[in-house]
Image (cartoon, rainbow over all chains, first blue to last red; front, side):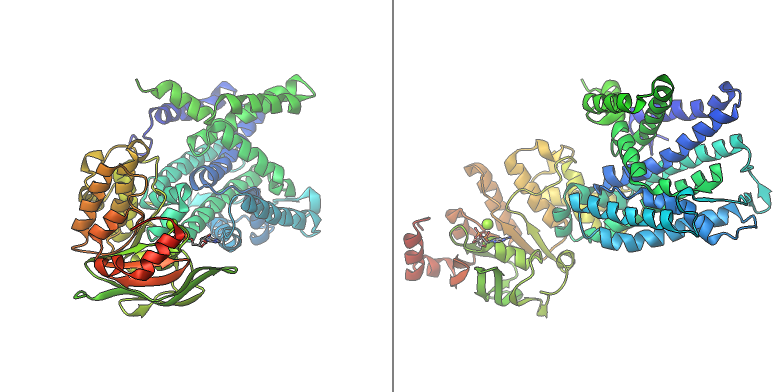
Length: 322
Length: 253
Ligand SMILES: Nc1ncnc2c1ncn2[C@@H]1O[C@H](COP(=O)(O)OP(=O)(O)O)[C@@H](O)[C@H]1O
Ligand SMILES: [Mg+2]
C-alpha cells in the first residue's frame, strides 16, 4: 500500500473513500436511483482519471478525449452481434484493444503538435467523430442506439456479478476505479513514468538525453484512450444505450474541469474532482433553476482558492512541513 | 594530433533564410582532447554545437562520427552513438533531486524505459551510474537536494553530470562557465582537465583564459565563417584573428 500511495493524504483518501463508497449503498437503502447515480459518478471518474494522467502527468492537453469515451460505447454496438449475449470480458478486451489501435492512428497525427495546436486538433477530430455519429442513420443519429442484449459476465464458467443488478454493477465499477488508480500509480512509478515525467517537464532536454519523446507521448496517449473507452463501455452497459452526446466537447470540457478541480496530475484527485463536481451538480440542480450559473461561480471560486486543486489543498493542510 | 579523430564535419552549413549562421565548416575533433571554439556573439558557435548533437539538421554538408555519416539520423540517436551535449542555458529538471536528474540521464543505458510495470527504483545499477556521474563532477554531497535549490554554479556542474551519465564518448559543452564567479570557473576548469583524459570535448566558451588553458586545438569563427584552427599559440599570434577581434571590438585576446 505505502509503496504505491506514497503521500499521506493519498493513503488517507483511499482508506476513507473506498470503504465509504462500499458502504454507501447500504445507507441509501439500496435505492436503485441513487445506486445508479453513484455508479455513473464512479464510471465518469475512471474517464476523468485517464484525462488527468494525460493532461497532468504528460502535459498533453486534449479537448477530444470524449471521443474515446463515446467510442467505447459505439464500438460495442459495432462489433457485438445484436441479438446475442456476448462475453463481457472478451468484449472488454476487444474494445480496449480497438480503442488503443484508433488512438495509435489519431495519436500519430495529433502528437505532431503541442499546446494550443494540440487542443485545437484534438477538438476538431472529436467533433468530426461526433457529427459522424449524430448524422448517421445506421447509428441512430442524435438519439443513439439501444443495446438489446447485455453481455454475459461469466469467466471460466463462473458468473461473478449480474450486469442487470445495479448493486452488482456498482461494486464492479468501484473495483474498476480502484484498479485504474493502481494501474496509473504503477505507470507513473515505473521506468516509463520517470521518462514520461521528464518529457513533460523538459522535452528538449529529454531528447538530448537520447529518448524518443514522441514514442513516450504516443504510448501514454494510447493507454489513456483505451481506459477512456473502457469507461464509455461501462457507461453504455449501465444505461443500455449509446448516444453521440457522450462524444461532445462538453463531455471533455467537464472532465477537464473535474480534473483541475481535483488537482491536476494527482490521479486520486480525479476521483475527488468528479465527486465534488457531480455532488454540486446534483444538489444545485434541485435548489434553483439557475444552477449552472451558480455552479460556474462556485467552481471558479474553488479553482482560484485551491491553486493545486482539492488534492493540493488537502496535501498542504495535512503534510505541511515545519 | 596523436589521438584518433572521433567526430568530423565536412563543408557543414546552416542557413536561416538568408542568414548564414554557419558556412562551409570543416573541422576534426580528436579523442582525449579539448577542442575550443571561440568567436564573437552570433558567430555561429551554438549553431555548430546544435548541428553536432543533431538538434538542428544541416542545410548542407556532412557530419562523420567514427567515420560514419550521421547527419541524417534523429536527434535522440546521437546520444546513443555517444554524443552528449550540455546546454548554454542551464537545462535540468528543476523539480527533482540531483540524483534523479542523473537517473533520468542514465536510464537509457539500463533499458526498460518503455516498461510500465517495472518500478523506477528497481535498479541498483542505475542508481550507481547516476551517483558516479554526480561524484565525477563533485556533486556527491548534493545527491538528495532538489535541483532548483542548488547554486547556479552547481547547476552548471549538474548539467555536465547529466551528460556524463549518458556514457558519452564526445562531450559538446556550450559555455559551461557562463555567468560563473572566478572560483566556480576554476572548479569547472579542473573538472574539464580531468575529463579530457577520457573524452573528446568540444568546448564553446567566452572565458578566454579558460579556453587557452584547456584547449589542445582552437578554432576561431566569425560570422559563421571559419577563420583559423590551430594550437593555442598559433591562434593567439595569428594576424587574421587579431584583426577580426579588434575590428569587431568585441573582445581582445
Ligand atoms: N533558430 C534560429 N533562427 C534564426 N536564426 C538563428 C537561429 N539560431 C541562430 N540564429 C542566427 O544564427 C547566427 C548564429 O547564432 P549562434 O549560433 O547562436 O551564435 P553564437 O552562439 O556564436 O553566439 C545568429 O545570427 C543568429 O541570429
Ligand atoms: Mg551561443
